[in-house]
Image 1 (spheres, protein in one colour):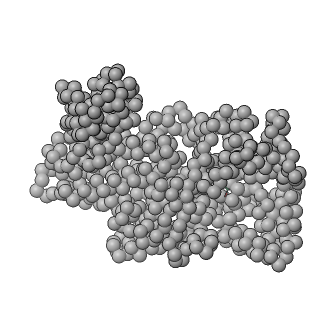
Image 2: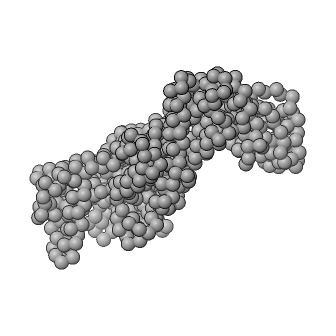
Image 3: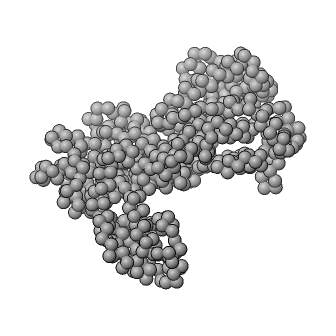
Length: 575
Ligand code: ARG
């Protein structure tokens, strides 16, 4: 579709000549999709040109269409004025060409080279270790991975980094707990769960034993001073934590190129402080070293009175290291809204230090999770674990599958794919700036705008292709079939394939995977529309025709499969 948009914009700009003051690129950016299919596939709003030419927009549209009517372009069935718009309808041959393209490009269909030569570092997940992954971190984990996939598909080189929270006084607490009532066996059984419990227990106990705070701090100080025994313990907690996190990441298809935790930056802080001093940016305030950021933002604390580093200190060092080491063109921090001020402070300090590249740092923020009441109510301020939600979704999916498809062989596997996919889709289809409303019934509704609906449509296409194979049919890329060329639903499906590339580019530009999720829904709906209108396995139809219909089904499976992959969702053959 992108090539047709480019073509339409070229035709328009040639017809406009130089008077309109619009470049071809600007025309391209103005192109829209008409509200309904009978109005064509591409619309050019004439308002801006009308202003420049001091003419009424409908007149501009009419003049343009007259100029273009002499062009016999095989890619467009018609070019017509519709009020203040000039609309284009893609021809059947152009739609068929999109299907051939799907076949030719396979898993790369929908990818582009828009970001070629650009390196983007994407930081996501970054949970605090020795704690289980809660649902808030689930959101940036999945958003970050989807963005990573989308940037790659848009031609960027990406580097994914997990900025683990593996430093800080909480380690002193866990170490205190472990020293006082640690149980090796329990730790090994389920490390993350055990460490989380240990932490909670220490905090509770502290209420009646305030001395714990000081003792725990002392223990962390020992870790900072590289005491061998405590360092070994810290390392062990860290490793076990990563193993535990990886289990969740695996279920989600989340992968990092690098795990570089906050601890990595401790020995880089000295150089940072020296640089800040040299640039006269440090001020002593109540014993602490801070950078004053002006009247609108609170100062950024760099070193506390007792000489320890802070969260922001490590972020400053991290940004400088990442830029020097990875030489990124852009760096995205996928982190919740609540840290907006923190990133403003960090980015401002870096700019004050004279780092031009600080302009390329971006906080990609997102909203919260809201559960409807029940087991997972967020009301009580209770921590909701990502794993619990995924398990619950999987178990509920088993029930649904038992009802819908009791004979299915790989039920457990299908339930995992559908359950996890449902949670992921519910998240990614929500605009990242909005809160995620979580309602089990809606999330797992096979008929709604949901993950299961999309996956079910995928499985349906697979099932059609399986049945066809049993009957001895081979899919063939559509070329001549009159039935397809005359079916609105078939043409509409083919054109829908062509919009994947646009969805990818749009999602990349705005850092919004929800654009790709919405595309997945439209694509599934277009397929179901086709399936209702056209009988694919029609015993009485000529074999050639059936083969071409199957070719369209196979292309759909490819395009939806590619789309689900971008969204960290698996594509079930059966469900
Ligand atoms: N570990 C932090 C937390 O759980 C998030 C880290 C975000 N990334 C960063 N570069 N500060 O709140």
